[in-house]
Length: 193
Image 1 (tube, rainbow, N blue to C red):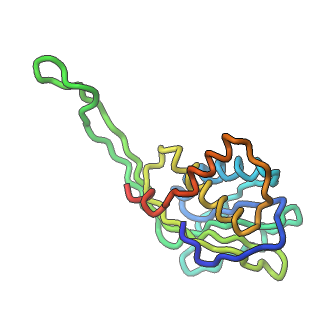
Image 2: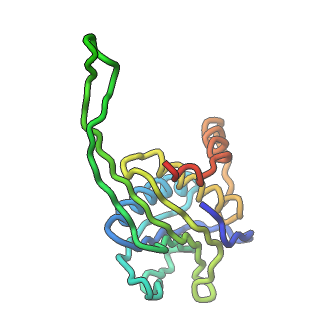
């Protein structure tokens, strides 16, 4: 996650709607990511929901007016920058240790490679959806790797927390260690598998 517009906030938000757009593959990614983000927001007592608004044609302006509600203080929007790429494949791979006689156990390995770039933006409904924060997210990994969603969500959450958009809460020692583990994480290397 590369921040392209960072700011400091004097307002801390108590309810955020996560909005996703894009292809069917985008929907799968965004549902998994938003699930992890919602867990983090709830841990800070922030009411959070996710909505998917579908595939947006490339040259069309993303109109958020029909999802704006007085129920939410802010909107975290994931808008694809380009076309998604999905490659589902299977291959035979050697797994385990060699058996006596020089044979090895073999099995099928499945992969679901997903690539897409997103603009992630935090908007306030004040002043006709004022853009408060923005970053670029480059995704390139296997859909079926759940810890990737946790790491991405943690990185975005930490950036919003550091900028003051999310209220600080007292952390238990185990949560503090988990946050410290994410602090040194460079997501640029995360997506180059």
